[in-house]
Image 1: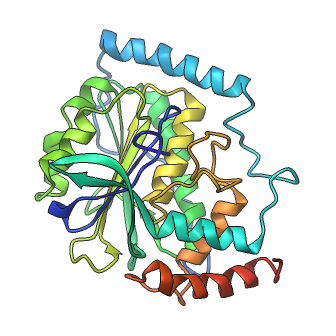
Image 2 (image 1 turned 135 degrees about the vertical axis):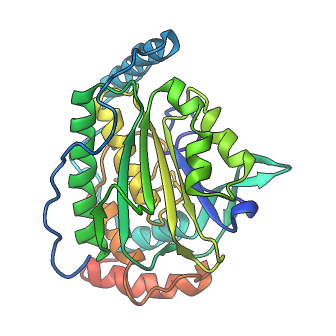
Length: 317
């Protein structure tokens, strides 16, 4: 999704950081064993939500209902009404994987589409889910199970090794309510000591129209991600939280932009699809195909994408 729905930003102070968020306005060769959603060593004392957080619960419930009433937030993954051609798949890949949605200008993160280079992970992902103290225990169990199941799916699609951990994580998923998010700065700095103040401010001062976001860090500026942090609002109703999990985790793998032409896709600000689609799975397969390489420009990646897309779609034009 986006920072103004879903967005991607390069932050010079972090070498190269992708930032995405959500807002309605604006593997290995064999699958990994299924992880068990055991509760980690986190507090089981649930603190009370603030009045601001309770108001957001009501607000996002209305947002979700409005989107559903419009026939949006589809969970079917696309079908006969959403055909796409080989050319469209290639164009969508280039726009979503080789462009960034946000840039840092004058110390501020602003919406500015810029051509980038291909970014992806080169090694295993160790994922940790972290909850704010005011997130109910039942919601923690539900969201942890959603993340684990979806991470296993991403593992199978990409060939990455994605496992769940409580120590030495390199992909952190924060599910927090308003008060915890406003105080998240120290936790972010503990994970990324050289994180820029504008990046911290972007998380702590999220507008209500921003559903969720993710930072993916490229410290050597060579197209290789080594750390990612996703932040998801705990006030969202179930489907919107799942939608944020689907989009932010996928964008944290390297599909950092959105495109109004992408359909069926979660990488589109129109909110038509809530969950990763068959089209999006192909984008991830293209991104992690060994014929692609980190640091590729759009010009270098396009002919490779055309070959891969032809194979994936059986030569359909």
